[in-house]
Length: 355
Image (cartoon, rainbow, N blue to C red):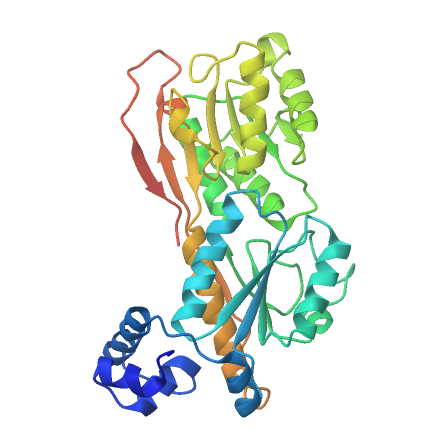
């Protein structure tokens, strides 16, 4: 027989009311009591009767998250953090993949509304400028928190990384190692986070007194062929070719490495390299790849916390719009740590973007 809340209360050594409050998230509970209840839930493998609870409370305790591509490792890490935060508060998380399509994204939002999801996390498939599209929250009919890709000029809660600061940090690292011709290859600049990373790159060059050379700004996409074409043209420019390359996302970074390796170029021998996001199977790369690591798990976790504050605030006293920016971390490995004058390669180091 499945355990009930009375058995949870007995095992946790708390009242049945405390168990109910932890599961429903309907009242403040001390962290010590909450952890006791969560441990009892784990030990007894408790699963609430969602249908009965929904009928009784007129609530589903269900959240949704829409991401653009489940096959990109960056996004499942966000999902893990979100699922953990939802589970801690007695909610369940539905994960949907928009496949990078704005039309499919709209369908996924409508599906979550039909399933009576109480709130939605959205990693949008496209940039959402107020002048170009309606508020995704009005489309969904549920509170929304945008994650990673922040809409422009829309009043919506969001959790992201300090994209400009992280990119500036990575570019400054390359400058500190003697590079003055630093190329940047981006994802689609229709995405606000990509534009912010380009802005950070420009800022770092300007702060160092270096010119911003438009020929070293390669506006790319997520496709291998586009990235390959940009990299191969960029590194076949004779004496003016770059000595360093910054990739603004992991998909583009991996495609750039494949392309340049196919030309017989190697890092750091022929060019220094830094990419955003951990690349697939990076432990297999020798030398190791310097990476701007985003706190993906924390992004998902914080996004659910923001969403639940919105849900629990209710329509009568909604909280103000929340915009969270988290710092990224630069993990310096061999691909970028050698100076131009053949100085010894540094051991792995870490730097943090300013909060």
